[in-house]
Image (tube, rainbow, N blue to C red; front, side, top):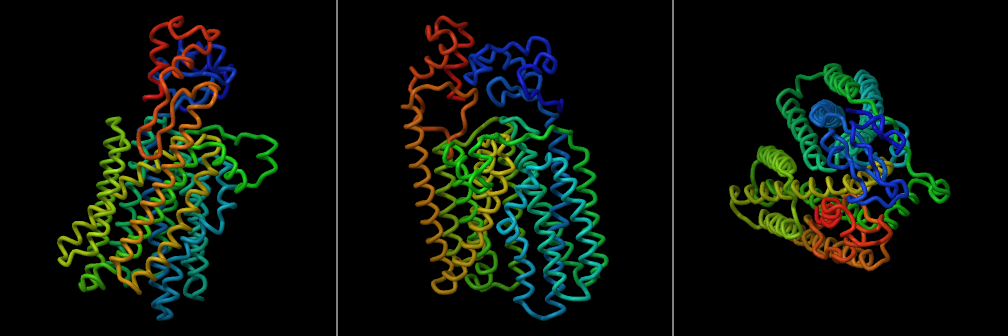
Length: 515
């Protein structure tokens, strides 16, 4: 089912019989799990409670997942193919490694420089519309770029910048699509499954160019790229239609720009702020080290032939794909990663990151590198799924836009800083510095989350959410005191206490914070 019930009045017409009974507290914004009586039946019917008094009917997760996977595979393969081919073609025309690298890096700059434009486009349409429009634009840009690139080398740079902008819009739209098409329980399964296409697409594009780049003319490359975008646009058209979700409108938000709105949102929502910062740190540091080490480790540390750079890329891509499948399996089994599990994964990941630069033998070094890649991708999927889960649906385009802008800016900083440290002091020193930076930054975020959590638990009760947000580092080790849950359960009955309500509803309220 793809219809979304946006108001209390629509519920009797859109939900199955017996699912539309809500207590009046839900209309007043004070609904808890105990106060939404139709939750079990609504969930069986495919609905999720998104907010007080609002029940959203979800489309078939399997169908949406397959379509998004296809869009990811074809559009990312087309984008990566165009970046690498245009970089290679620039080098063959000019012989300049600097220009070739500029063409390859140019798409990474677009999410940072054009974040306001990307946010406006993502907010102006549904995920389906944004994906269709972006891929149609990619098709036109690919044909225009590849049919004229032999006339001037600057067209290659302009083309990668334009396709990079389209790619950035798609990344935001795909994240918003996961939020819109999947329930909170399914996000942890849908996110890694849809992103497996990213790893496969990169591998396909890389292999095609590795074996046939000398035989592919710009015109043929244009047809390949345009074909990928065309398939992605057609697949996006098959996504279920949804109503646009407008951002919450208040005088303060109307007067503020996108960046100011994000700052106000992060300042007001402690959980969202913690997850946002944690995701930026995870990607900036761990992906930044990967960008620095994927060439430096085999060539300069281990003194291996140039072919081993490709082998290390294959190892990294395989480990990332295995991590995506493993995390998807955990999501399907409803098995989360708690605080201790996150801490253990992080510790082993950082040790493997440093260890791969210390090991003198290639099998040991590459094995540790594979372990580092596997664990960091697991952490990536965890923090990405948590961030999507806690972000309000109406603010998902805004958060996704600045999420990608922040991580790309972070990767540029860590990439340049890491390259400088590796040049001056070696890759091992770079790994140690990155590990310390990561540990200190995440400890600071955890302390802030703990302080905010305690302050929230000590504040006067203003109503409880139906489903609590995940803690940024796993299950909250400082849960709310039991008597507050009892107060939540009795809030709608004149504060008469929990035992005056039906036992099943009281039990649901008492366990809401534990789920």
